[in-house]
Image (cartoon, rainbow, N blue to C red; front, side, top):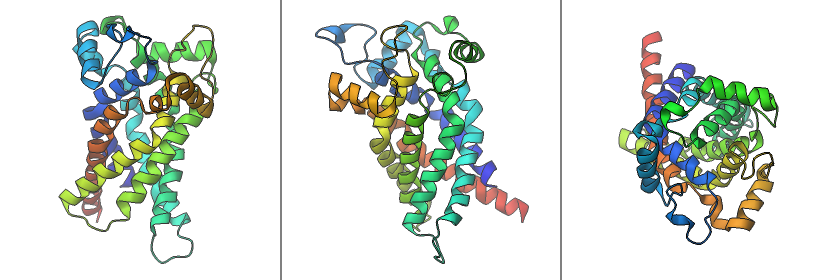
Length: 283
């Protein structure tokens, strides 16, 4: 039931919210412009400016670039998230009769780390596709990009699993806050459930976005072809902060919150209702 409910929740969330994930990635990949560079048609000044320029230059359906990897992985990813959360929750009871806020937070952290290890290769392919600024018909397929990454760099931390530590940091921090905040409140009414899911998704996004920026820089195209500028998670954060200012670590925050605020609410509501349906069905 945890697998079925978690997979359903993830699939619905990614289908609705993917364009905002793409906008977030584009904003995170671009370095701060030199004087006058903001006028370039390839520089994005915000969420709606990015959507407008992408639709004009690359076509409306470009907003769904890179959707196949998350669709392929989202069902098992969310299934693993919720399934391992329940297992970690038992481990972190610390002798208590019922789960505490610390139990939920540590179980969320564990689930996020496990989820990150599963999803990182798909994230690498997704970011590569999202960074491609060609028109939709000229963008290589998901499988072609995957083969190219493997042929050029292999499966390791310089290839298909590039950015793994940043993904672990991003997903671990987000789920620690997300599950800790939501499950520590016993109220189960629909509107309250939506509100708590929204707030927990928003808070998780605000706290973990520096890891997300580092992940995008590590997994995306390097500024100079053939030279790896962004290698490690914290090293990438320091480079971004030093060259572009501390605020650059929060690039893409608006579309991320726009996605994971309501996305967090959607995911938890779908999970709870599918779980309840399956529970009744198998009784």
